[in-house]
Amino acid sequence: MGEDILHFYSNIVPSLPPHSVIVEVGIWTGRSLIHLAKLIREWQLAAAIYGVDTFDGGPDATREMRDYIKLHGGSLYDLCQRALQKNDVDDIVRLIKLPSVEAAKQFHGKNCSLVFIDASHKYRDVYNDIKAWLPTIRPGYYLAGHDYSSEGVRRAVDKFLKVSTFGNCWFMRTPAANSGG
Image (cartoon, rainbow, N blue to C red; front, side):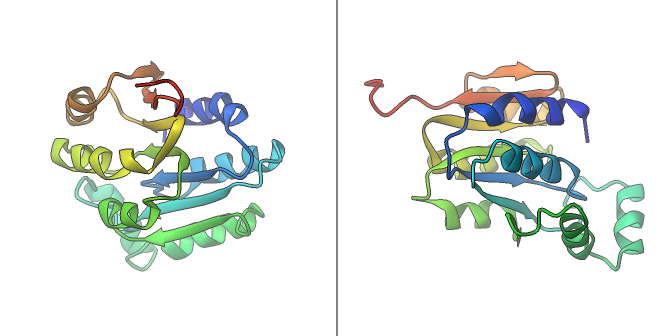
């Protein structure tokens, strides 16, 4: 996980409204999700935070990643849950063990203030993630992600969106409800 995600979160969290719905898609071992939860608590936003992952490494898993997952019983879910508990954020973060596109269906109509996509880097997967999560974003708030330097990520993001970058993170702010566009 890149340090740029931690810096991105540190910069974006202060702009989020209280009681936000925030989703991180693709959480691996939960490091950035824990950082996000601590920031939410520090800013006293009382947000609902969700971590979405299959917890099996997905289609991009390298041999080293698969070996690491195997070492932890074939799933990183329990490892992530323990990390949330150890960092005292398990009360504000809910893990969802589903593929990204399936999980997105649970968030339609929830008006997410931030969805951060850092799952598969394959073009079709990123394309489908963006297509699934974009409708969940509250007007005036953020769809973002990581690994913009990856060809598959960049192609999918650029096909759909006009984004800004922050390190290797990409992000876009949806039009505000009263912006007329």
